Each structure stands twice: as structure tokens, then as C-alpha cells.
Image (cartoon, rainbow, N blue to C red; front, side, top):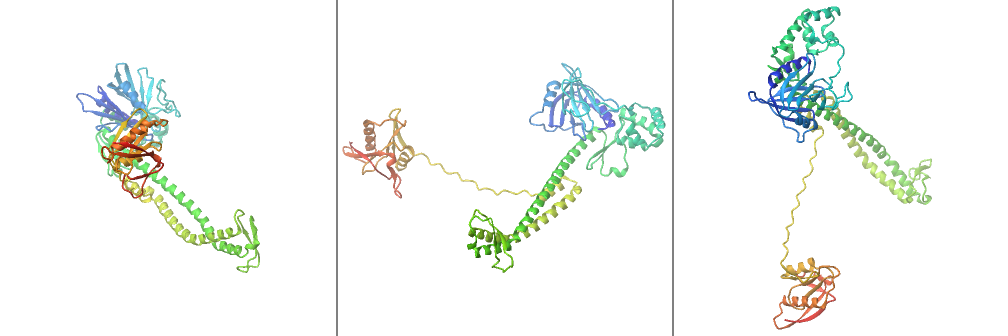
Length: 550
């Protein structure tokens, strides 16, 4: 934000926002605030403040962006103090990069201060006593701290004359006193309120620059600036003053600074994302190159080890040929070269923790592995070298990637995402319904469970019954499995309970009325399934019996 652009925007904001009420406050990111305004006779407008460190910007937008799900602290402070407040004035000092928005509330006149200073941008909320309530960016490591409950003071400025306070005569006099130096660099170093574009524009008028400055300043104050040129870039650039035709290729011209800044902001956000993605791609390439170089170093060691396969074979043969000379737990031995007939003895390192025969086997294994590994090392080295060439070529071509699509395409080509194999879904096992059984709670200590079918008998015996529960069944006749369940572990079974359960088993059998039947019973732990037998058929041991008359 240049001082010239700030003056133009201040005038546009005054016509658009004064007497409007602040209807909604939100933040679309940690560095972007959006204030929505309402006036019955005007269209809805949204003031966007974005504190990008290199390019802080403020403009009016016709569209509202989505807010963060949880409002940050600064957003909550604005809602607490300024919601439904009325804009009373929008002011800026000529030559500064600071805009003051005054809001009328029931508690007094609050102020929002936009500081569009590169590297140190801020958006600060002040109370009626000009004390800081909250700020979008707290900076304690710059020229002045921005802390709550402290009195607001703008950034200190060097002791230089402000170009915006000079008329043509004062301008001419100071320039003459300096010896008519190059105007652009002189304005930049000796005055406040200048910028690169303004300096270059005035320099193009030569000796007529003082008169042109007075005319330009009057045009700005009276709103006669109607051509704002946006050059798409990247990076996008906004030109206030007329530029050479060559620089305006693919440029768009807007009649207000707000319109131009809104489009510039959209392009700048895209450019910012592109730069971030490009930076990420560069980091990934650098990391991948280092990784491949480390693999090459390891492959060199593997190659050296593989080249020793012949030596390991020779050592293994010597050890096998002279096992009788090697004692256990030796770390090294000198053996005569009886295999290849060398003149000198050969020093062979040994592992003292294993036998001489195992040492020979270890040498043969290394020799075999080395002969196979050499081919694999050669193949792998070629693959790594090709990968390095590809990465280095991509690194050299990074400056030529201009669009986000090109960056994404390069990223996907160099680092394709591995798709995980789709795991087959586990089929849900069908739940087998619990068979119908009869349950009779005798007391708090015992329960009688009676099967009504083969499946119910199976369930009663092998699902409900515990090892120490008593199990009953009529001998030599089809009938129900009956279990006398203990509801508490230490309950004592009485003869009456055994008789009751035996009668229950007799009643639920195929025995005819008026006959006597024998009911066998035993602990459930002695009841076993019969392999291959139909459901419900069991065998038992250690049983006892009772005679029951039906």
C-alpha cells in the first residue's frame, strides 16, 4: 500500500462507508478480517483487511467470503465493542500509510487503525481514550510494541520533509538547493510520502516535475483519478499512473481503486498459493536428492562387500581344508594356502563365538550373497542415477513453472501418490438367534434351565451351564437337558433341589404318564459332545441317578 493509494482509498471509503452501520464481523483467515456494512439507501458492502507481511491490503468487496469455524480473539474483540456501530469518519494523513475509521457506539467513539506498512502491517482497535484494546498482529520486536491497555502511537518516522505538504515553489527550491540531482532517487531518500511509481512518474516530467506534482495532488484529493491498471503478472501489479504500452500487455483497467484492489487481491492469493506449492516442490526435490545420494553411498559399501565374494570363498575353502589346525574361540589364524598354492600364509579373521565349521559356512554364505548382490547393486545404481538426473533436471526447471497446474503436474510426476490396496470388506456373520428355552428362577441362589429342542439343549448345556452346575437327563429316553444353575458361586445344592430338577427332567421327556423313569445327573464339566453325533447328543461320566414316578 503506497501513500498515494491510501489517499485515493480514503476518499472512496468516505463516500461508501460514512453513516453506515457495522452489521457483521468475521475472519476468513488468521490474517484477514472482513467487516460488513449496512445502509438503507446503499448496497451492502464488505471491507476486507488482509495483513500479508509483504503486501498488506485494504479494499471494499461486493462478495462475502466464508468465515473460520471458530472466531479468533481479535474477531471476538471487534464483535464485543463494535457490532452495529456507526461509521462517523474515515481519515488518513497525506503521505502516510495509515487509515483511521471512527465508530460511534453507546460507550463512546472507538477507532480502528489500519497500518498498511510493509513488513509491519497491523489492524488495531482503540477505545475512546485511544488505548489499545486488541490488535490483529502483536509485534514486540519492531520499532514500537503494540500491547493492550497501552496508548496508541504510530511507528516513528525519520526527520524528513513530507512531499505532500510541499507546493510547487517549495519543491523547486529544495531541488535547486540539492543541485538538481536525479529526481527519482532524490525523492526516495530525502522525502516522506513517496513511492517507486510516483517517483518514476514525476521524474519523467523533468524540470516540470514540481508543477506536475501539484496538479497530481489536486487530482487525487478531488477524485479525478479514474484509470487503475492491473497487470496480471505473476506477480500481479497495480499501476496508478500511466505506464508505457509495453508494460500494459494483458492488463485490465478499472475506474476505482477498490475494484482494482479486489481483483489484485484474488490474483495475489493465487500467486501466494503458487509460490507456496512451488516452495514445497523445491523442498521435496532437495530432500529427495539428499536421500538418493545417501542410498548411493550405501550402495558403494555394498559393492565393496560384494567384490570381496571371491576372498570369502577362498577363506571358506582354506578353513574347511584345515579344520584340524583351528582351535575353538580363536579370533584369527594364519593358514597355508593349500587351495591356490600361494607362497605366503593367509591371515583369516574368525568369529570366536562360533565353531570353526560355522566360520567356514559363514564365509561361503557371504561369498554366495556377494556374487548375487553385485548384479543387484549394478541395477540399483543405474536406477538411482536416473532418478538423480530426473530430480536435478526438475530442480533446474523450477523457475519456468508459472501456473499452479504446472507445479501440481510436476509434483505428481516426481512424487506420485501410492494408492493403498483396497482391503476386502469383512462379511458380517449372521447372528444365530438364541433358541427358545424355559427358565425358572427358584430363588436368589438357583435357576432351572430346560431345553425345548435339540438346539435349545445344546445352548443350555454348553452356553448357559457352568462347570460346577448340575446337569440332568432321563436315561435311555429322548428328553430335555435340564441344568440347575448356581446364581452365586458358593451356593450349596440340597437334596430337595436335586429332586426338583430331576422331576423337571422327567416331565420334559418322552416317558409316558404313570411310569417310573431313571434320571441321571452329574456336574456339567463331565458332560461332553459326541463327535459326529446329531445336535443335542452327549456323553457323561461320574453320573448318579434318581427314580422318578410320573
